[in-house]
Image 1 (cartoon, rainbow, N blue to C red):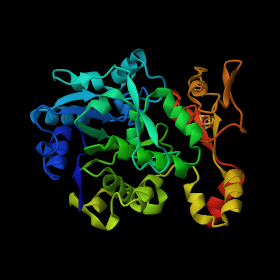
Image 2 (cartoon, rainbow, N blue to C red; image 1 turned 45 degrees about the vertical axis):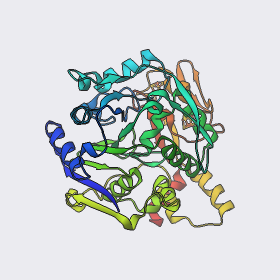
Image 3 (cartoon, helix red, strand yellow; image 1 turned 90 degrees about the vertical axis):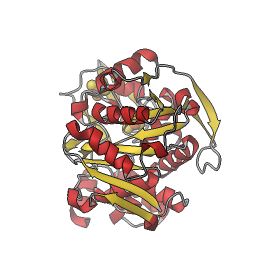
Length: 380
Ligand code: SF4
Ligand code: SF4
């Protein structure tokens, strides 16, 4: 039986007590962190955002986990490979904006600036046979994923397993997006990654979550929850149920269940009642999963229809400042800067939504073709 703990936490001022309770409910921090353990804390720092934006793991949650890991005798390292380049200068700017420096202040936690990585085999990998992983993660005895409760334009939901994508160094992430441009294959790779990294547990920051066009351009949702589990798939399954997804809506979860990495009927929820949070109406991203649910066609025809109806990125010229970040991060190089503004080559675009994820000004919107909007309206 996989245990998932759920604890109410309406205010980050109460984060320590809530995180501690969430861990106590699954056996206590000492069950996972032993004296002398090298503990890597992997926050969700998808991009350089302030904690108030509700995009990244809040420093209060990170601080609570550092203190608890240290109380058990662990040596904590905060490590992230954010979206964008993987170099010390960029890492520093991300850690600083996201509040990692203040979270570590006065503790013995180390912030990782070492950009070394190694390519390692993925034993039993269904989609990839090897992956590059950042060094601190490979050297750790204990890995704690610290995701944010958010929706995600490409994968529907961004949780404990998706958060591990930040253990793959910088530009390799773009390469994987390019190679695995279909959502199912990409999510299968995320499951391979989870099996390779073998995280010890996850503590989810859902005090401020994000709904709509996550992981960076949605709306803050005060979900008021902290969750923890040793089985990341089980945690994601329960979190998704809470925010109104079915098992089949999120490919990382259905893939993990199909591979027997968790059994939905053998998950025990402990702590507060999931229904008491009232999160079932969480707004979903404007991408295509809803549509796929109502369209049932033979596979070939389905592929064609999906292509015709797929949502796509579009630039909001009023918000765009011409920084070029979207062009730099675009895996197939579908964006070129023309007269200081991005121009998207539709034929090259693989709809990974990295541009939307990493635009610092929220200037990349998701656009639905008219037929898509029509179908959603009338076929729901
Ligand atoms: S990242 Fe955003 S602001 Fe920068 S050029 Fe692209 S759309 Fe414009
Ligand atoms: S334009 Fe945006 S959505 Fe399309 S491939 Fe590039 S980054 Fe991905």
